[in-house]
Length: 211
Image 1: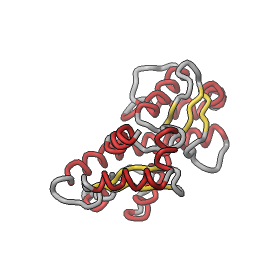
Image 2: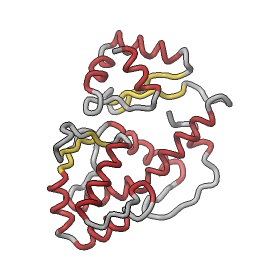
Image 3: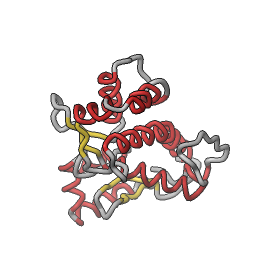
């Protein structure tokens, strides 16, 4: 299990009870946590936790010229996902009438969400816009196909898991909570308004905070 956990962390995975239950149980034991953290320290990484030890991930212990490029690359990938995922969360909040955005362990049922979206023309229009560019871009025009595509992309990116490959239930992973942390950081650091288009020329400080 040590090898599996270490490899998952080094590949950028977020270990939580939903996405990696066995690995999460392994890291929940103090002895195993120390063992993995000691190994990561040899690679200039450290084992970090989020949300009261509900999520584990590896981050660089220090920033230097050897890893700065990798950090920038990881940040750029996450930043490209930021706006479409946030817009999708906003759509889900509107459809379900929830006051809070989805977080780890929340359940997304495809058919239930589809019925809610189909009842509101503005949500159908939002779905069409969401699938025209960026992360969720597709040539699909049917609302059912568009929603299925978006959920598949979110699963591929690690924000959702599908317990039963043949089912229609998705569960939100800890990576979504990490995204919330990034949003909070950007809002605090730059006053970023997520409903407005922005162009930030200097991202050096932000990039150094990502795993």
